[in-house]
Length: 269
Image (cartoon, rainbow, N blue to C red; front, side, top):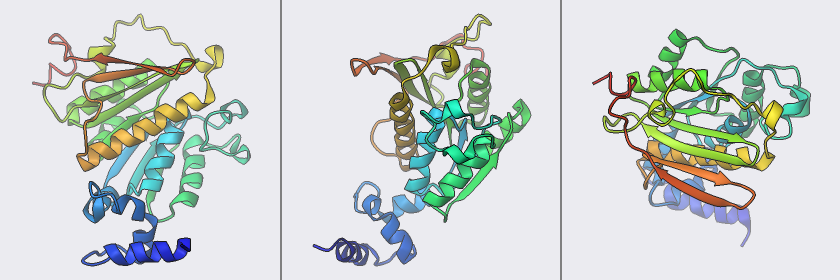
């Protein structure tokens, strides 16, 4: 069957009673054909706002799939500029973007993928006050940062505003991902998993290296968790930490529980 004919038939079959444009019906038809998403779910995505902290390796893959999926508004924060060493894994950025702001480069790329959504670049390292406002305005937050200070600040803001936090990390050949759905009072937060002791040692990929496809795997999973949260689909990773060794492709699952002495999520009760 001709692909164009197939797409037209699919559009006609789902058009009844829908106020999406014909172009949107075609663009998102493979989502709409899923009964769990349907037209109503795609509308929800188009009305959603996701905040992405970091336009590096994790943020690249997460942003690409969230934009393609039709998230109506993406706010992307990153104060770094694109460096030649980034290009091996940060697939948002082409070679021509070297020297440019990562946030602005991200907007350029994402606009070519889906020009109908809103991309808000913030080309700076936001302070705690601004971060609080950005988190408050978002429906979900993707943490693709690479340092503990930022992770703790993002977590604190998500706890205060009861926003779901989708957290990922990757170094060398190992990575992890978890969801802290802070809309629920019994959900653990990032601080429950990694208490802030002041002794956390950073292991930057500039020193340790990172396997390029690994950040793509985790970033794509972060996007999937965001969509599931926004659409209330299936079972998210809330309360579970998934760790991956990409050399063996073995996954390890760790159950997470709220720390009854956590000064962040318990202090808000």
